[in-house]
Amino acid sequence: MYFIGNYRNIKMEMLTDIQHQAMGYDRTATMFSPEGHLLQVEYAEKTVRLGSSSVGMVCSDGVFIIADKRIRDKLILEKSTNKIYEIDSHIIGSVAGIIADARVLIERAQILAQQNRITYDSPVEPELVIKEISNVKQQFTQYGGARPFGVSLMIAGLNEGKPELFTSDITGNYLSYRAHAIGENDDKIKERLREKYKGELSIKSGVNLVLEIFKEIKGKDFNIERFELVYIPKEKGKLERLEGENIKKL
Image (cartoon, rainbow, N blue to C red; front, side, top):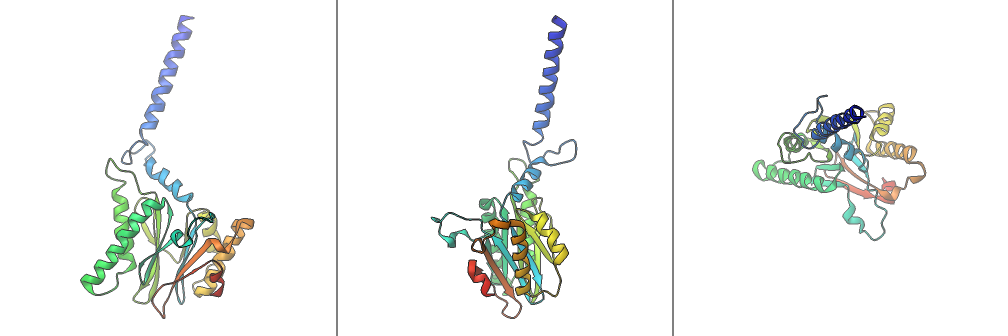
């Protein structure tokens, strides 16, 4: 009986040590697990997928982002729930994840756009904005004492009249897209976009396509009042914003 009891105690101690060892890899953003993962980064990616959806698209006559605000509380003032932000008159951004984290990054992007106008007397390029934000996000996966930003950021804008769309992930990597989705159901939305997206789509046709995809995925939960649209036509070069039923007027 002594040996059986002693064996059980040793086994429990070994299991506890293994558990503590495994837990240690996710206590800092700078420690790799034996499998080569940064667990804090992967947790942050899961947070992004819990955020509300945003879809961006490059079209023949401009670029747009449409976002699900996912706000149902009647006591909240609608103007305070915007999910698409003005970075400059020709650049917009949308986020998925922790909005408080996103606000810090959006403000940094806005300051960068202002500094570029003051210094060079010209509008900033969308890629410079996403590159700067991505650098900041990467730093928070490299230094101890901080956690990664729990945000995926989508930037859309015009670069000398050419529409561009970029998305930055948790790690600080960024890519350019023709059409992309972040947030809830992003995999399903991107699958539909791969099937139906065409480069010659106009902003009007692109918005209709994205709303059809949202209808298909959300089913009975679809409500146009939950959406906001910001688009930048090539001709005007400045953003325009529509919300709820007003989107139908486009």
